[in-house]
Length: 424
Picture 1 (tube, rainbow, N blue to C red):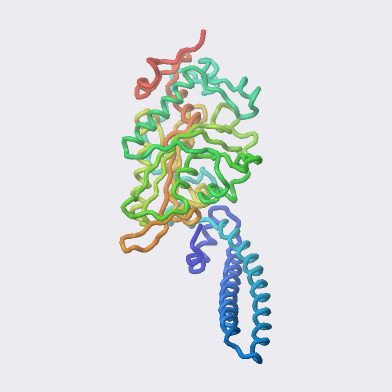
Picture 2 (cartoon, rainbow, N blue to C red; picture 1 turned 90 degrees about the vertical axis):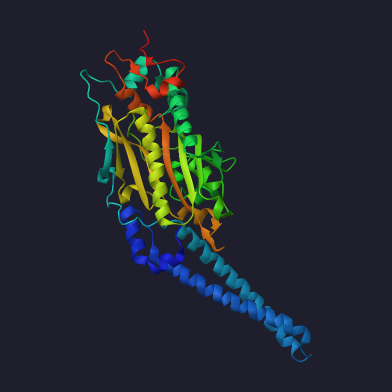
């Protein structure tokens, strides 16, 4: 969340940022609650101080003075209870509203509403051209018998799928390659819980707005994560780190779950948009330094590009517009990979800088070089998400006979399979 002092001093910029991001939040109401909260705190402290003075005076008071002091003490106690109740009510509304205020986008973020307003920054490779009529990944998956939606939907419902045989190996190969790149780059691999408490979802900024898109295990009051970012950031929840311990560079490998609320009827063919997927994620926790944050942002982005170039897939990097960058981000870059069946570059990675937004919500702090306590900065980026990453692999590497060449970099992970052949 944002520092309330920042919101007070930059109310118009906060309002403009929220509007450009598409969030409807009442900043004026928040500031009213903040003022009332401070008034009640001040009054509460004054009454509490007077009550302590009276309590100390009673034993020393004369017989004539003591009854009046005792009566005043009772009145002060009642008044303090009323003030506490009023303050708690105001604080509850204030804290709820504060959690809903989005971070302010950096000036370089293009103003826009959808991914069509994203701005291309650079590209790698060229869209694949075929001298035959190419198949989409769903048709290829059926022909090769590596993707089975029909049977999965039978027992798991809409947007379910099975990866079989070489399809399962292909996903695991990409994930192993991704994890190898992360370890080589000095990231610490972490396998963590995908069922988490509400506090972890709120602390990382996925709540309150993301509840509709999150699976809730009501009996245990746990939530299924949509990214390992949730547990990677939450590792240091409510901790004070030493400066020499930063940066913390983590990579998570996990199943992920999203309801895809509001996407009914969209991307129903194939496995572009599904309820369960697998992901390798990057998270960095660093000192509160904007220049360093940008350096790390670019480093996280370069890791994703390293993977895509190793796979030799055409892609472009775009600056995400204000309507696409989410609640906590000040900056987001998307890596969009060429998918022939969509005749477009489509998002496979998103790299986000959040400054201290998550750290404030999660209580992640550190001692700076002067010994002062500061909130840390956090960043994250996808390295690989499957089955979405399989779409460009299958579609760009397909051959006229329906077979698919395995990218060379994945062959060592594929148990000798260099080409996935149609089932005869």
